[in-house]
Image (cartoon, rainbow, N blue to C red; front, side, top):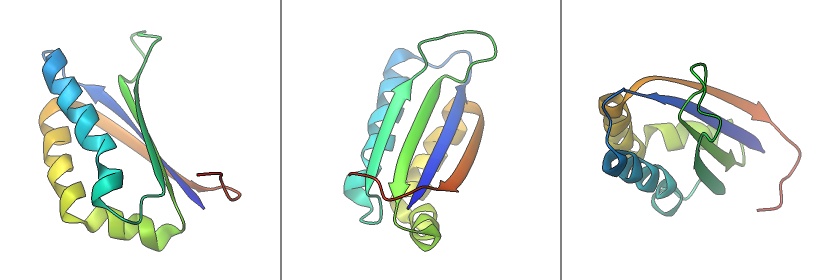
Length: 101
């Protein structure tokens, strides 16, 4: 399995409602894209200057499924929202043993 993690740094003037919409949109990718085995989106609780604000943690069967996910219309649409609300994002994809999902 592949664990796909994305960390987001929000722009300073993003509203609570915009963050909630982004969180719902990211979480909803599981329903929109069949290759997503599990997804979790959480806000940072540490709130330090070095912290990212939001994390997405998703599971896929393989890298081909990650590619299909990243090219899907639902993902492309949420990326537009991310680009509008976030000043930066970083991702990592790594292999794990089979997860209980």
